[in-house]
Length: 424
Image: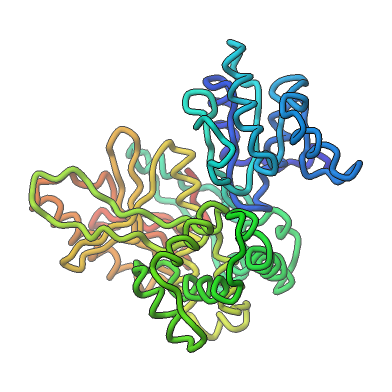
């Protein structure tokens, strides 16, 4: 690895901050999203448990005596620590013995069962979530528009540049995998295809330490792909699998499968927004289904660039998925949280960003400019509803658009923001 080629990530400042507060940080996220490179960027020594040298000598040594691999200049990187789960307690114990901060950086592409782990690490180890690259990190957003500036009322209308539909489709199919950045056309789809195959053949069983029905896992993944960016219930997923005609799963098995997919960071559902209300307004408590990268959904649906050009309805959902991936990363960079909103009256918004000071912004995601008027009208309706119910009101309303060449504020106060110009 030539670390001089490291592409900065939005997670970098947070890692530096947490290293100054905690004895150790653990960078968690899906495989191939760049955790190891980021860990190497911040560390001063390292132990790579996946190194096959000496018949995986590092892993064997760590399993024999976890404390043996902790020595080295700090921060010391322990890459793929979940291969030897007792390392967690060894790090926690070591941190307890020394007053210094920032002793270890741990990376992991799955969260193991608590079997063999005695302590949660609370107060000693800070967990930091990492995702595939956002468009801003990969250089596909010019960063002309800052979400922080919008929150702070420092936004200025600006021309952001022409965007072509073909380009948006290519970015969605490619995904945010660092290894895909220099792969052209449909060749980039081979990486998410390989990812899905590895999940079905190996990762699910390894994460749960038991054998699962690979066919049912594949049916589940395809159902989740068909329901990407929707609030499909578990019952809907079971029905979807059953309609395939080749078996079904019960609720307990489905919950187990979904838990494993969450622990290997393949899915990251968006929670519903629940503001503190003085009224009795009911909020539909349903999570929005979401894969960690839109390219995974494309791979499961068999969707390539050409097919999506001929099916813009489907691409609309995939475009939303890409935007949500970016918004999750941007929200983390702003110490904020990302939600979606939906109530029992049918009012809904694609995304809500809430800062830690309580301010929040309401967002609709639309592919084309021809959808902006309707989206803006919906946002204004939601704002009025919150006012009527005595709730706090959004700090801003915005439509994130794919095919817009400018970022601007409409006369009704709703912002129009191109995804290819956005940053935290």
